[in-house]
Image (cartoon, rainbow, N blue to C red; front, side, top):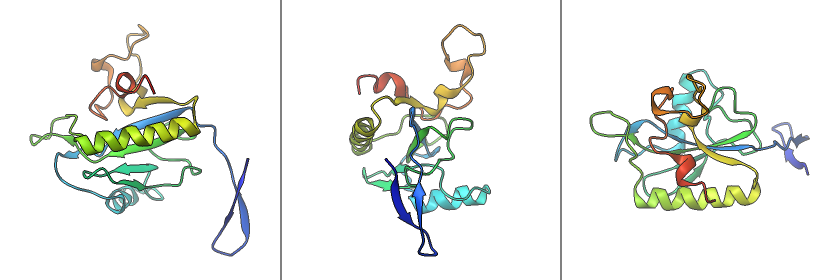
Length: 165
């Protein structure tokens, strides 16, 4: 079912419903304990030449979930897979030495799980993956192994952690 939306000119236009096949988890690749907001990420992405924040949701250090792009808009978070995915990013992902690490705290984990449950209710067929799970299977053995990851993001095995949702 389509929803109506008003554009800046006051005329209504149709929002296109997207078929969501993946919910993709990311990290901001920032040092543990340093807070960033949707506005910060929006600025980073605009500096890269994008129209704005590429993620649909941001999970802050205190567990607050901020809206990024509206769900009906195609994100900019996994090259080649944006059309049919929802992107979620948690703040963190690096240790003090700038190495990849799962830095999610209890509040972020709780918020992420709650958001995933809500999204799975809306998109029951969608698979939950981490950004790294979109890497190529270089040795073609059917498994994307750590040496094949193009990125460590989100710095934990999202597919395994959320396989029961």
